[in-house]
Length: 425
Ligand SMILES: Cc1cc2nc3c(=O)[nH]c(=O)nc-3n(C[C@H](O)[C@H](O)[C@H](O)COP(=O)(O)OP(=O)(O)OC[C@H]3O[C@@H](n4cnc5c(N)ncnc54)[C@H](O)[C@@H]3O)c2cc1C
Image (cartoon, rainbow, N blue to C red):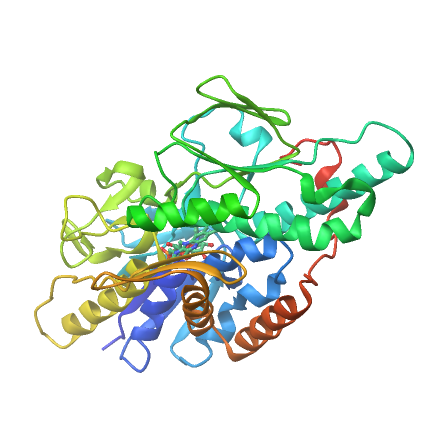
């Protein structure tokens, strides 16, 4: 009998877990991704702020799949899905048939309809985004330095980060360290330790998924370190070099980072099945699509069921655990066993604010702040990184950064990123 063919869309946290869970099983696996590398998104802000190199937070997919002789990789964008004929189309031309399909295409940054976001802000969702933010920051400083030396008007250098979730909090804290400890020494003529870094959050507190006491701790730490935190007011619109708040305040900024949220990947709508809030795919208790037991949707792209009314959050653990679950369901089918419902185990949440400061919330109400929280954050991120080389590289870079207060990844790879002076490059 022919071996069933499992097609996995996306080599992110969820998709790679599916491939891992099917290793040594009597199935052929094809993983399709837009990129030939997996991105460890939780550390993108470190690439954006010159703490790590792009190669430290990415890993070649073929290298990961090498351990599974029955797995292959296809580089390309899935552009259509035919649930009836059971095939997916890659790059509008190549058709790949499946017996099982796992949709793990993640999410994309969204403007939530706020005017000016697409043209005047930088997102932080992909490795390209992170490098673009870094290039923008560095080239803007270079331009300001040239202006200062030539006695011309120095361009605006302040940064506004929109979105007070873990990404925004981590980005704002890391930016303050970059400006104060590194760029201020690189560009002494600019006084960069006084440049405003502002974090804007529409909710009444930052880190809303965390306990209120953790939010208070995060806000006070950010403020103590020199980040201005504005909560309880949304962004009305974004202009060239300014963020306009709903209360009329106008925040000038040379760089605007949009970390306000994500929506499901457009791959979700290719299924033609029911989507819920945020464009996420509605799935049943076993994570398969209603009426299509051979198709699973997991991770950010799916509305994975939780114990509460709302779906699981779009973070790494639901994707990882969902990937393992989908693989187990496929194996159960092959072995003639009944499927089981997905049970999510909440391992807690973390956010770092910079050197020696992190918020770590673990199950059973355990909370760690300050250095202990930070060490827990460091340890867990190293454990979840893929590949020994990446772990070692990150450890060495972090050790170096910690001891010297320096950030080595300051190569300006794309000077054009700042050519017109607009925050979006
Ligand atoms: C800056 C940032 C910081 C974060 N920090 C944390 C954190 O600290 N802790 C935490 O738990 N979570 C964090 N997250 C969220 C976490 O990274 C995601 O929840 C997780 O990556 C979701 O996994 P996934 O497998 O669903 O999708 P992803 O990991 O995003 O993978 C989706 C894959 O699908 C591919 N793809 C998309 N469209 C197509 C297509 N049309 N064809 C082919 N391939 C496609 C993409 O290239 C990608 O490789 C962070 C996210 C970001 C952006």
